Amino acid sequence: LCTSLISSIAPKYIRYASTGSGVTHAKKVAVLGASGGIGQPLSLLLKLSPLISDLSLYDIQHTKGVGADLSHIETRSKVKAYVGKDELADALKGMDLVVIPAGVPRKPGMTRDDLFNTNATIVADLVSACAKNCPRAIIAIIANPVNSTVPIASEIMKAHNVYDEKKIVGVTTLDVVRAATFVAEAKGLDPTRVFVPVIGGHSGNTIIPLLSQVSPPVSFSQQELDSLTTRIQNAGTEVVDAKAGAGSATLSMAHAGARFSFSILEALNGKEGVVECGFIASQETEFKYFATPLLFSRNGVEKSMGVGKLSEYETKLIEKAKKELNGNIQNGIEFAKQYL
Ligand code: NAI
Image (cartoon, rainbow, N blue to C red; front, side, top):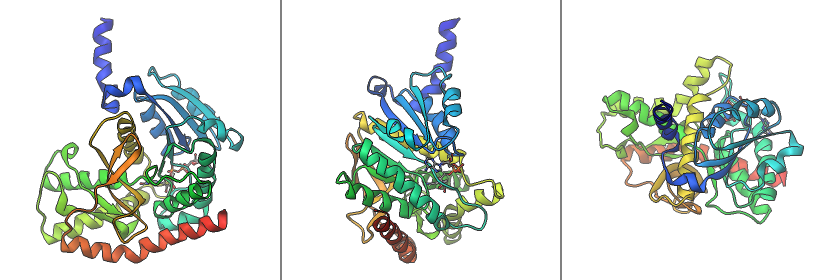
């Protein structure tokens, strides 16, 4: 009976692990902002994965409770909880991957840029601690505005002489997740088999879904292109409005953050061909930072896969995004100069 029970439970967990190879090379992961709306369910999903040996939870409040709770789950990873600035250094030592969902979320009527003043300092403080305590870790930034927090993180790492552009990535996976869901709904497809590359940035019209490059290939009328593009760009606001003051996307973001983390960990373990979209320092576009599909390896981001062949419609979307994206990036760089 025991054996059959274990084998019936195991596959559910393995869904979150998606590889057997990771078990012997399990990695150390920290979640900064672990007590929040995203941080808690994200930590739960990470706790379920055998890709992780050590799960380090950090927040300025409530982590001891979250940690005690998660530590009772019968999976291999060891959970340690750290609370308050004095414990931040210990939370980071030895980490392979640091995921940052710390910071305030939007309320109805706010843009992601409205979060800049609060979240810029939070991210700068946390990344400074990473530079000192785990300079070689990959840093995955969820905190908004991602278009600015990634440049901030990069400037901080540069100032500490530990910058590696392969290791600082803004998490745009939720845009990819939403695009797949909405395209699958519109075309009657299985959402788990749909991939829509999303490029650009992570706010309003800087989110650019490449509906001409959907896998499996599908074609759209101009009306469908317009309505799907608008919905993908405004999907975050759909959730903010529905939550009516109680925050922004947390559960779907936790899933997206876990998916992104598992992909990185699989690549760190040597799996080949791992691709996820992410917002990084860009070599091949006219922007200083730009989201594209990225190929991950044992080093972090191995290379950008570029933007592929764009339709005229998508080229126009990039043109429209230019001012906002460049402005957001510049704000981040300027902030870092003041901060440092
Ligand atoms: P929340 O307010 O529920 O949780 C934030 C957590 O961060 C809280 O537990 C808070 O105590 C903690 N925190 C604040 N200052 C901190 C510091 N200095 N160090 C460590 N922890 C600190 O917010 P929620 O909903 O979890 O959102 C977090 C961030 O994620 C927001 O900036 C939000 O805009 C962003 N977000 C990003 C998405 C993306 O696609 N990249 C999607 C959805 C949200």
